[in-house]
Image 1 (spheres, helix red, strand yellow):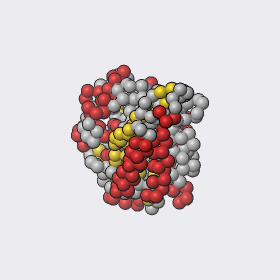
Image 2 (image 1 turned 90 degrees about the vertical axis):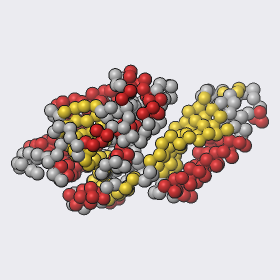
Image 3 (image 1 turned 120 degrees about the vertical axis):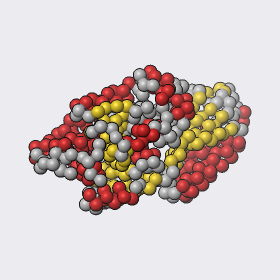
Image 4 (image 1 turned 60 degrees about the horizontal axis):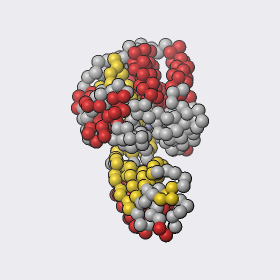
Length: 414
Ligand SMILES: [Zn+2]
């Protein structure tokens, strides 16, 4: 409900406000050499981002708190059951882009500013959130904050997850001043979410082809991560005859090529984007190669069949190299069809913006199992994501803030 006409100066100031906020955030966690962002959970960079979030809440006089799972909340109104919640995440993949995640958090704060400036008095409390460790770059499991909150991820398993240096999540949280002992399903925090709307940069070029700055999501493809552990025997790269070797790099290499070919046949996608080699020496035959497969498809049967076929190929390749392979599913997210009521409402409020599916996972997808969720996408001219080439123009970002504000204004009164 709208109480007063919008002062035009506030509307006009949105561009500058977006630029200022964005420029400040863009300086945190950027690697000078690659131009990519390295914002990993519970590191010094992450703590800087978390401090920024708390400061944004404080500047706006919003109640701030961090829930038991490290997710940050900023409240317009007192925390209450059935609130309207928006937000995204502030962490990144290694050398990721700056828009994936932060755009949703910044847009949430600026949408609140816009609604307040317009004199809107929401019919229910509105919260902006930063969900902890969405990308899973450090501990290998994506959407840790939302998975813990909803009870999908077992807190004991979460506490024991290790980064590549062997530090557990529990240790890392403690070092960062957070308490890992209270992690786990949080029905109180979940009850606050009446509806969740996440704004995100598009990870693809559908909106470019459709000629639209903003779109609404229909579904998230099912997807998961599997660790392939190939084990052989470490030995000297010069003194060991080829016939005497048990080199796990060979079945690893065959598996990567097979994953690509099999995914092509299946109309799916499969990616090996992370490898850990032991001992990782130029003149040493490895004893172990850990490789992580990420696989996604429009439906769950296709994902399951594809991973089974890649596993069979890996087993054959491992045995022919006199090595072994062990495949562990580390995470899996079933297909997500976003809430039809919210989706239709948003479509209407935004004047029939395009609807599109996505192959990327999001906290909104995890939350959708328990609460109504929706997503807005902002056009990405390069279509690239998880890379410094990820982009959205300032004009489109501001259009995203306006769209989110319109959606929040409408939904807050429902
Ligand atoms: Zn994201």
